[in-house]
Length: 290
Image 1 (tube, rainbow, N blue to C red):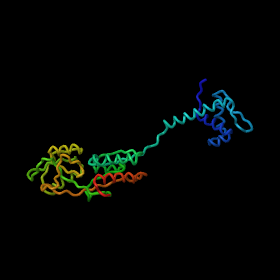
Image 2 (cartoon, rainbow, N blue to C red; image 1 turned 90 degrees about the vertical axis):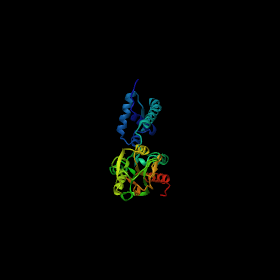
Image 3 (cartoon, rainbow, N blue to C red; image 1 turned 120 degrees about the vertical axis):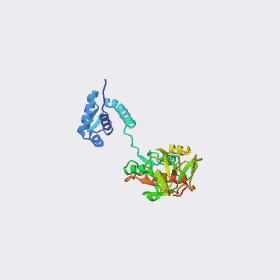
């Protein structure tokens, strides 16, 4: 005999057997008594067996009902276990952090490590872009929180700390006041590109763009190869590069600032914990006091 048993009907059957009453079972299951009576009738029809007898207003199991009870419990338990395995998973919270490429080598790995230890249930998404684009992404709601670099006087966000920017060249490049200064620059728009050009123009120093790059790695490679000089934050990996901060040929550069920009309305329960992680990593990396 092949049957397709209704799981809900089996739940009703089990509850009636426990309470020995159709009425109390209906109340416990928050359904009407006619509804559970109909389910039991259909179950009896599919099994071709009577499952209950009434005795003094009690619903007692028949011999056939007693045979079914053990298997009904096993079936319902197995059904619920399958539901737990394949059921709806809890939605994991995510946070999107943005930062310039300059922070990816030293700062980002420590933020990832800190979140893994202190906020393991939060999924981290990282967006790497220039500060001008990160500000737009935060304003558009596509990034929750971003580390932003800008000139001190232009920084609209809460400033965490000042940041020195420096002229860099290859180890062997020699600059003279004769001829044009060769520049290796990020493609526009870029704050460091604009700063380098503006300062040279203000100082009356002739320049030419010898190399343009979309990313930090290739820009550093061009500078290391002696193609031109560039402007970078002093925190960048300067291996193979030479600082020109005491050069008499080049103009002095203003201080930049690092700030944290947050998306409007972004206020998850873990917000302060995340900000503390980012601040702690930044403080540790730069040996600064928060």
